Image 1 (cartoon, rainbow, N blue to C red):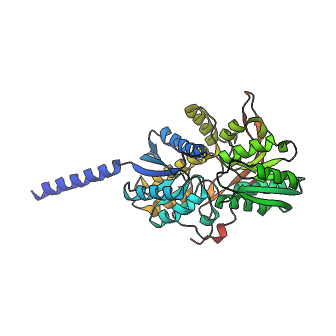
Image 2: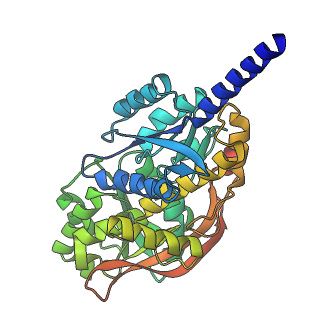
Length: 388
């Protein structure tokens, strides 16, 4: 009888264990799906979802459930979503935030509460240096990186001075700091605009009066569309060349601005024409599923999902041992669409950086063509300040 009871108990325990393992791992995505920046979050979500779909609802062979909510680009709303994910849904993995001010408001709290946060976009300097955390991973970049490569490229050019413009929020300041770190010539002016601004008449008049050799700007999403169109309407695109990071020249933005962006050079850690097997597969699959060429944001969402999958595979979906899960993440044992990818000491990417040029395609559309690799295995400027 005793032996029978032990057998029944063992069977019950096994059944519970099997039941627990059958529960999908919940991944909480907080991203921007409204406002003029809505497509940024859409592309992060779509890139991530593509990776899940390619594995039939799994990542690394583990069933996952992707929860997605719109933060409206508002820190307070993002905090509310994060709280709900943790308390109601029991989420241990989060991702998706687009804007740095939102990340700064949300990430420090969730990582203190034992959540592993993997950034698929925002990479504020505050979280890369002294504010780094063992539960925080940037899978995209550190904000300054995409501007550092342009700063170096323009510094090597014939331009002797540059006019700088960006929105007045953490990422805007990071992006201009990145450019200045490698551009050692004259800065004509450094102007910060309102976040979400759509009318740049005053700024364009000031640029015309300053007569710089070139303009470097960071104005993502709808801000970039407005600025580029108004810059061209003022005729300045024929007089003063524009430079910027990839965020202002992604595929969907180019569809909105058209020929006025032709010839503009921009910096990126990824492009659809990077010739490696993972990227060729990703770009083809994304085009087939969504009917459009992926943007930088989509590539980052996809890589984030693939990285999570590589770590879930190691721990067999068991997040009770977060230390083992994080150790697996740090190894970055996945095929990145960027090619070279590893983590530095602050758990930010060590990766190659490129200059791209906006060109016209045979079918009359506009896209980016990679023209030069400027940095190889580039490490961000804040890694040395991180003590983990």
